[in-house]
Length: 125
Image (cartoon, rainbow, N blue to C red; front, side, top):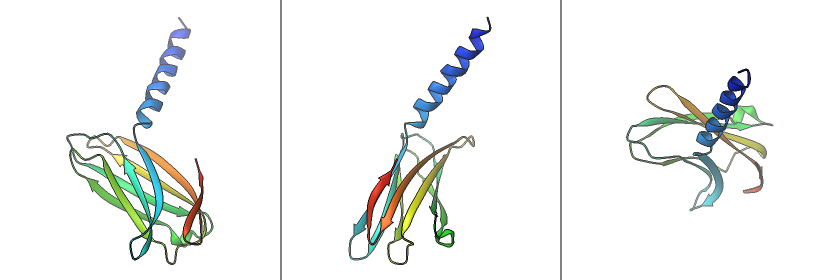
């Protein structure tokens, strides 16, 4: 009987891990006349509007950090945020994205990268 709670906890952890894998964030540099770092968040589409919060964090220059909330309209599965490359601190960056649904449930995914010059040269997973 004592094994049942352990199995339930393991099953819950497995389901939570699978649910968390439904969303992802990826980052790239763009040059469409103005160089930018663009991070795109992709998740499953739902028939409700949700809120997505991007948190940009530079390990070496926290004064360059930023947080921005964006509405993810109903039936949409992706949203992006960008930063102008000029003036961004070189070094390791972490972009965390939190998806909040109407019930207040949250899911967070992160992407780490090394910014050197005007390129993302090394992604850390």
